[in-house]
Length: 307
Image (cartoon, rainbow, N blue to C red; front, side, top):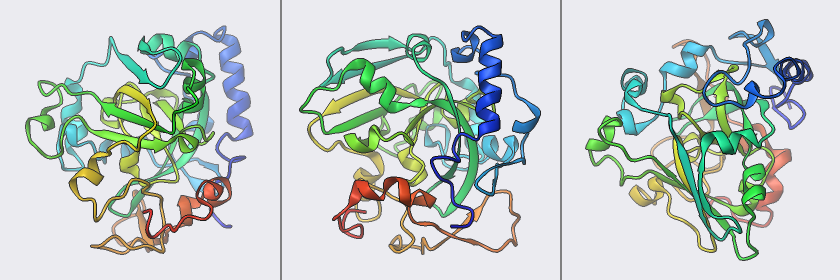
């Protein structure tokens, strides 16, 4: 399918080899550090380069100035204007529930044990707009394997930081804080599900979810929770914030599905940020173009009922 990203495309060979060369030159140490860039930006990673599957990555400016992050305000420009207040070091994530090794882990300890990958994903949000973002990070499944998933676990729940003195949007009751999200365990363990710590080889900016966020590329963007401080393994379907607020409009799964309209707009097409105000809208692809990789997770499910 034209312009479709596949599992083979998410880590292009030239980037993979380049990353290995850089990591070898650094002794494999600095590449896993949260305190600085995950790797040096190279010419073939420059904004606008056609990087995978016929998709052109959005520019750094697009990616970092047009954001949904209600903790810093509801306008798309609010996060870049307000997120500089957020302190991201030190940072820790509490991991609890049905795991063998629960605890509170520093971000440095988490990342140091992971294999950092480069992946280029179309990242869609709720209002039918999209970007193509070159993320750096590691598979969520790597982390879950390290803490040990107990046999009774069926879901993974996430929470965002609550710090209203820095996240000024939390001084308004826009959503019930903390922001919460969740995945089924098989979704969380899928190799496309990523914990992102960088963009374009640079440490992820505050407005994009520093220092660590989820990326689930076949779902609408609000599922990819930012600035995570807690992960819970559970046997019950967890609450997710938009489903709490407007359950008729936002379901637990929130898979990209052009065949099911949002109650207030069609989801059959999307606007790519950076295309220009008068550019023709693009057809939305089922599962955001990852149908071959993830459709099997939902075999036999009514995707209009389980939206």
